[in-house]
Image (tube, rainbow, N blue to C red):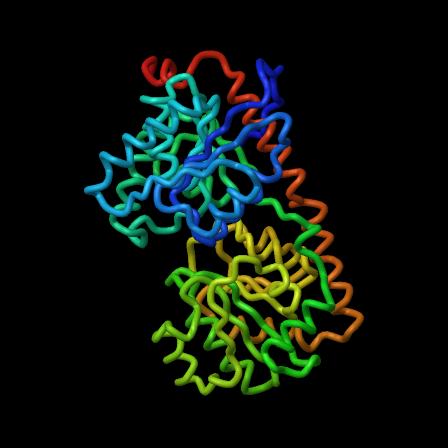
Length: 401
């Protein structure tokens, strides 16, 4: 793993950087892209974003920053020729100096663009997740991951957001020659402690101000293991007056699996399903404890850093770099162990007021000192400048292999 190289002298400003992303739904990887393009120095970079799918809610937010967003509308194999044609047209129009793939499918399409319509552009990949078990991925994603391993010597650099992700991808054949570790970054002015948010969230849920709230903010997906969180909630509810908040795409009362688990556990009056929330800063700041119950798939979990920036301690499963992010400011438990999750949450909720205040301050300080958005954006800026200034176009390096 190499550090971000020092940037070379600019040939021109601003650098035209195009990000090719799988999609722009409200997820951790997508939100990190939104934060990054907004944080890059406007005098140095002219970013644009191409989504393989639709513009999505995050794409709308990126567009509101004044950054061009293009959507290929790729929703099936029969649309592939049209999507590739549109990708080529967009790249010829923008003429990017750097093409950045974002997530597996985005990396593959950025590679295609760099070999065809944007042959003078430097190619960079960004891998946003860990890879515990290839068989657990969707069939098409498995194909794309394997293709990525075969093509992994072509990018100028591969960015990982966690050490674990880099190690796991190496074991699947990804070449380590140009690995760069850049963690996720957090806007500590947006994500901050807020007594007002605490009061507002309880008022929204029609709960007394003193009510303890334990939250899980994650899209509905097997790897997020909502079932373990809800079992932990059942155990904790039997011994406390705590309530539980779940938010994320697919996490609402229209989800029959979730509502069945909640009903069977006798939690109907204790669990609040809020669905997808485009802006979670106030929600996180209103919690007493944030849980990450994931069984796998995490690299560098955004929501944990965001909650910590709000001064909210976290209980996380030992997946990805979650333990590294939390440090000694929260609790780490094994995945798939609801009893351990419940015990850790109870321990944090039962701490004396002075200890809670100290833990809250330590959580925020850890994010401010190690994972601020400004510091992370500077690392990306250095890498993108270096890639744009690298000698010889990407296509020439491809042909020379």
